[in-house]
Length: 496
Image (cartoon, helix red, strand yellow):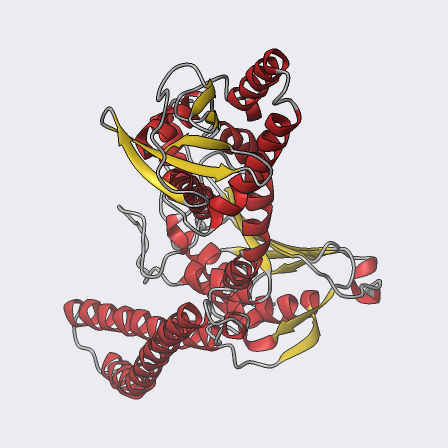
């Protein structure tokens, strides 16, 4: 992975950005600490440095006083002591970091560290001095012996830039940071992940919401950082809920208002049909009747859709096979009018927790759509399975597989429809199924490939048949149905 790709990945992750921010903070703090260390090493500190250099000067003067009568041994001891000071703390005799010294006995120079700055003209005793020698700043400290005329001058560099480069060359500034950063990344990542756990729980609360659940979010208000987001989302949910309520109220009111004039129009048209004079008038009146029936069906579907979306229907325990049998009996007149036979198969009794009104609307829409698209003389098969499933199958034109997701959209109809419709039938079925936690599957019927009926349309010249399966995820207790156990197949023919 390239550096640019890694940077884009970190920028695209909130956890990555927070970990990177922590690492940058550590880097800045480390840089500030190193800068202070360099500055403190090079500065002229009258308070701290005499107390720091005093014990070192006492040690050197004690050696000079004890070996004053043995000059050769004293020179060897001072030389070895100077080598130790030059390489102290692994400084490797660097001019910017080493400690140099001048040792005097009266006016005679006993020892001077080799190299720069050489002999230093110290003027003050027991005080820190800042001198400039050959254009470079130096700090000196001179201390006399209490027992003899000996004195020692300790010398250190006061050039901050030289000290900075010297420390950088030895890795003293960056190396500890580079070694420690990898060990800091994992704790930083873990701490960020732990701190962001409320965000994940907050997102899970939103993700698990059903489309119809617009109640205010509860979890986010417990944290100050999440409260503005939770308040904004709750405000949006409230606006959406109010908008949907206004939409449902408008459609329901409009549908209710339309029912009365449509009923009156139908009565008047039927009265005119009784007095029609010629074939042309009869044809026009029949067209008006069909239009009125279509408008009445649309109104009924709109009301059903609003009821399924409102979520105010009471859930009760009911018999799925009993309700389906009742609805098929009620729809047998429509099937007889179109020359379609209804067939019901129930192997055993099936009870579920459901909304009676919504489930009735679901069954009616599936069966009515199957009757409408089934050719005359064919059979619409309805099966109630022991696994709490409802299957409605017809031999109609079907729907191509490409349209099977779209047909659940409100007012959507597949192009080139042969039958009139509003495009609400399967939308109502899907809405009711979602409210019950059920799934709706469209598949080819027994007549061929490519089809699913209802609000869809032809799936091609070879597409025959539709099978719609509604399956409830949680079925209630099921027990054998005495009336259907011996005769599992019922036919609704000629209005029977």
